[in-house]
Every structure is written in C-alpha cells, then in structure tokens.
Image (tube, rainbow, N blue to C red; front, side):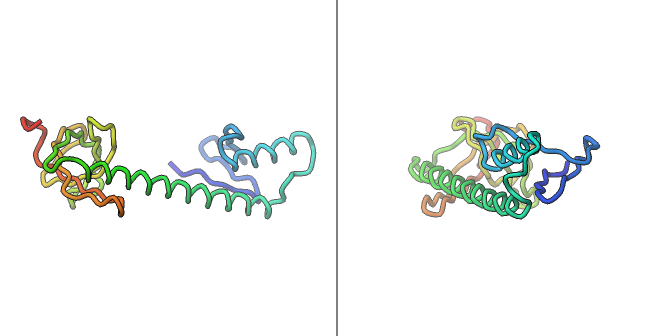
Length: 162
C-alpha cells in the first residue's frame, strides 16, 4: 500500500480508484489541513476564486504538518517519561505478564509486547524465540524517567511464576 500524498499545485491521481484527482477530508474541526481543503473545495463548488493560491496553500500545509509532527513527538516523549516513572517506582523484582505481538528485530531479540495488566504496548528483549500471541513474564531491568527510557526483558515464558 502506498502512503497518502498531499499535493497542492495540481490534482494527484488515485491509482486504486483509477481517478485523475482525489481529495479526502474529515471534519474541519479535527485538523487544520482539512479546514484548508474545505475552504478550497467550497470556493470551487461556488465558482469563486480559491482562498489560497498553490504557493500559499503549500506553505500553510507545510507549517501545519510541521506543527502536527512536533505535537506528536512531544506527546510520545511525555508518555515515555511517565511510563518510565511508573516502572522506576515499582518494587524491585516485580514481574509483568505480557503477550508477544511481533518482532521488531528478531536477530537482536527485540519484540513488541502488550503488558496484559497495564494495557500498554512496549518493547522488550527475549533470549528465546516467541511467536505472536505467546505469553511471557517480563522484568524491568532499567528505568530512567528523565530520559523516558525503560528496558524490559523476558525472564521466562509465562509458565508458573505469575
């Protein structure tokens, strides 16, 4: 699947639908880019000049995209710090039940897991092969809230420890 493309100078074809041009927007109260698209479309449907020329629109879309990416990055950083703070405050030796979701780097033993009791997706290390859906017992071996860093390691398959 190809990622979505944002074009402002000329219509961008939609290969899957076989259309020479395509616009997809959601509610204009959700994203500024959607509000811009609504303004442009409404003007075109009314036979009025577009509120933004392609150059202005490209600048607005770029600024909006950069602001959105920064907000996403900040949200991830804040979440990582709070998750790390949570693990740093847990009793030494605490164990966590988890379900393996997928390998991120199987050759390095790095996988994505779901911490069952927390409903939190995280990254963990495992020294043995596991498949999606397999249950594990994890231990937190390091947590640094200032860096937003948590290191979880599988200590054994779920078996009898929990």
